[in-house]
Image (cartoon, rainbow, N blue to C red; front, side):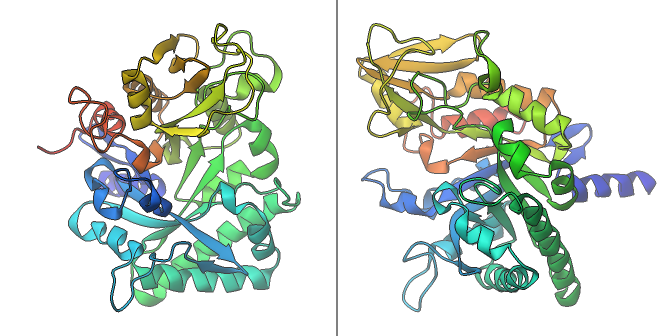
Length: 395
């Protein structure tokens, strides 16, 4: 009986379950409601989700407007004549073993609305009451906060503390609402900027981990077209010739910083990108890691299935053995991306360092239509995660 109780405490605290020595890792998947507007045939709808790939689906995004939660797409909410995206995603919880949360914010949302909402006891209380009603009305099982970032991008230094105060008040309200209604408690999670140059000012890490059910480290977007030299979107390790803060712009260094400053590995998801970032090479003859560039190619972000199209069109793939990631070159185009080889190494990293699971941005960027060919199959990146975590899909 004591052993069973101890296992229950582990599940409640971390969302991880160990059965006969095998860990059930979280596989968090973000669904983007704007992917429906992608050009044919790449328009991605809730019906295109394979829920067996995920333990949690995060519906991205809703907005915070004037201290309340607001939908962002014309068809998020159901009407008398149509079933909305919210309902079409939350229905997965009835037909599969998946938990569906609503994610608020995102990079484009910035900090201004979050900062105003978190500023006072009254503004936080109004938001908390509204968000509980919103989640229950649309069938979500929790809230994922993607505030990018407290104490950054116009957010004052005080927001570092206000963020954890907001989280603490949300958690308390979720527990009270569950006690009052008898419904399962709403989950509370967040996605955070991983690099130390963001984290040290934005987050009270130790306090956060006492509040949130789990935390996703966004261990991607480390480099991009805003820089003057090529750099991988999500390197696993630093390069030997990087100096200063550049040496922290990789998965290992950022995750290590978080753990050293209070993060609990079992409550942490390692972010994995299903997309790459592009650059324009200044000189196509100089194309290695750290080569000079002039901004991004158009588009700046490229889905994995489009990487496969480029490789089929004579782009050359290279492997960086220091950072353990691939990149491709085609004329003056340079793309740093992840593929099954690099993702399998990141999955092994998750297991070796005792993290609670993975979180992917974003589902529609995987090859869900089979562009990459029969050898890779559908959703090759997500299936690499699934199989790498020792949880192959049911046949």
